[in-house]
Amino acid sequence: MGIKRDVIDLGFRMFGATGLHRLAARYTRGLGAILMFHRVRPSSRERFAPNGGLEITPGFLDQLLTRLKAEGYSIVSLDEAVARIGAGAGADETAPFVALTFDDGYRDTADVALPILEKHGAPFTVFVTTGFADRTARMWWVEMEEAIAALPCVRIEAAGRMFDLRAGSAAEKQAAFEALYWPLRAGEESELLRVAGALADEAGIERVDLVDELCLNWSGLRKLSRHPLAAIGAHTLTHPMLAKHPDDVARREIVESKAIIEREIGAQVKHLAYPVGDPGSAGAREFVLARQAGFESAVTTRPGMIFPEHAGHLTALPRLSVNGNHQSLATLDILLSGAPFMLWNRGRKLSVA
Image (cartoon, rainbow, N blue to C red; front, side):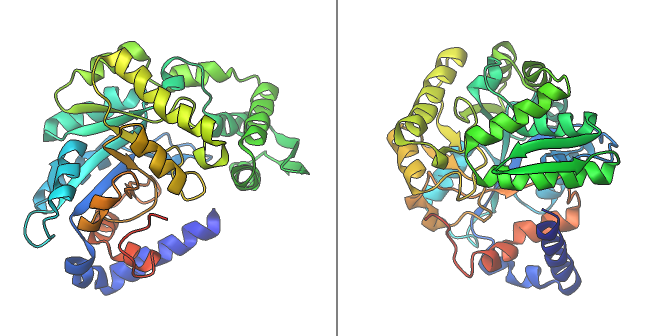
């Protein structure tokens, strides 16, 4: 994780120093972008925050929306974004669009982000994991963070080896988290859940309490769904990395989450977000399953801009992560130029395989 972050930082510095992204933007920006958020809350000031990339401050969200409007972006709903993709207008023929999406159904989407979105009249979509809403699914990445924060050391067999890691200082806790996280992410999800659960148990952490503290329940989601700026999308039943599971499991996660949310909020659910959403979590099979389930669109976490060519791949749409580790308007400008992703994708507009 540290090496990857260093490479990303280097790329941002290169574009910032040269301004090449501004020159390339006309050719690389496409129709616009779908932005991905998770949490919005005041800075926790915690030195150990391995999931800090999943949260931004309210102040930065306000700055971001102000900048988008000042730069002439149309902030649109996902419905409108899909319509624009279908129309296929060139980026030079109309104002570029941005659609805002929030994953998982966190309480702070309603409590903290919503007043800012209202201030700017910005429509948004919240992707809901039904198991978080009814407290039957687990937020394993939070379990790991909270457990390592509480433990002085980490001794556990995981991913086929024995780990014996110091976790006294913030730096040691960060190193322990990363040492466990990536091997577990790469392996079977059952092993990941076992290890996260064992650490949480050792630290005396109630798994359900974490979800209850962080996520909206159905009552809160029904209230949010009635807001004129809000739309609710599906984020599966239990937040699995779908590509690691058999066909019947992946299909059930997609199909039943849509049905449950529609029943709970009394409105059609048109859009899906794949949990984790990288190529190892959602691929060609999942794109077909989403289309078969009746979703009008489905979004990944593959980085990229939206192009007219995505009209034939509406269940494999890329998003730009508004990353808590890079909360600056300069970084936002670089991302929205599309230039980094043309390099990332080796000159290809689409990453849909």
